[in-house]
Amino acid sequence: MICDLRSDTVTKPTPAMLDAMLHAPVGDDVFGEDPTVNQLEKKCADMLGMDGAVFCPSGTMTNQIGIKVLTQPYEEVICYKGSHIFRYEGGGLAGNSHVGARLLNGDRGRISVAEISANINNAADSHQSITSVVALENTVVREAGSFYTLAEIKEVSTLCRSRNLKTHLDGARLFNALAETNDPAADYGKYFDTISICLSKGLGAPVGSVLAYKKEYEKKARRVRKAFGGGMRQAGFLAAAGIYALDHHIARLKEDHQRARALGNSLQKLSWVKSVMPVDTNIVIIEVAAGLTPEKVLAKLSEHHIRALPFSATEIRFVTHLDFSDDMLDKCVSVFNKLAF
Figure 1: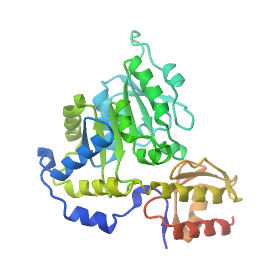
Figure 2: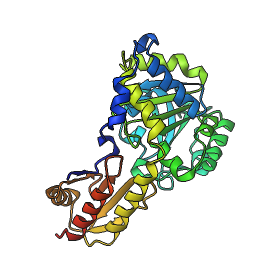
Figure 3: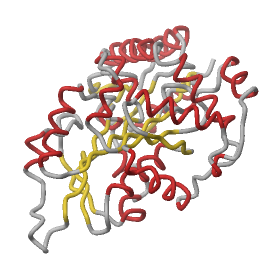
Figure 4: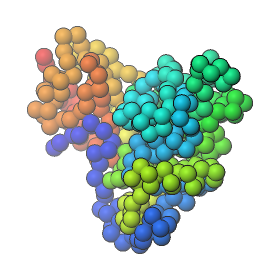
């Protein structure tokens, strides 16, 4: 039994999802003629309280399109210092949009109104770049899936609107956050100009992300997707998986969270673990004990067919998902308890 906890992107389509993909009606999406893609885009826009949406291959692409349509070159984006858009997207902010990043510490990645307000540049000072966008991440991947509540997001949005700043949400795992807060997804559209969600993480689709937006960004978002190479043709086979995931895999996310907490609790008691970050959703991040490296621990785990991800010079990440069962959880806990260095 292989327990792959490197990411929630490792899931395979369920038989029912494959069946939905097999029977999806398709057309040429670049011409706007794929009915299943159109259905997915409308579904996501409606779910998030937005005016429109565009289907893309990856969450990196939807984030990068979102920032591109909201900014001009030489401007600055405010975000958490460990945010995915800054740290894990290949320098896309600089390369694709020619913008800088003002990096904030946040509280486990959640940046506050006070921090944001103190870091908005003076637009009248030509020495400074113009602050144009505040980008939030929910959940925060670098901080073990910590999340914002809608009330916190409303506060940030209110500040941004008062200072004429645009807002982008990297909601790759937004539905994991909503599983904990029970906030209405449709209310998010009140507070953001663009929202990126991933279908290929906790929701279990094989490929795909969606960028939802206000109506004024429709034409530019599609033009930028084309320029970035994201115009797909008979993409309805992939979109059908996304529709199935949204219909059938949101309610079960709490199961992933429960298993992640069980993993975290078991790891806290072990001599080879120095600390465990609070487990808020489906991500567990540990710091290994002094004298150990993530690579040494991961090599031992690999001998027992348990896979995880080195996350820094001292950290390991485990992510629970659709294909991680209770039997796998029991195996991991058993192996953890027996591991010795």
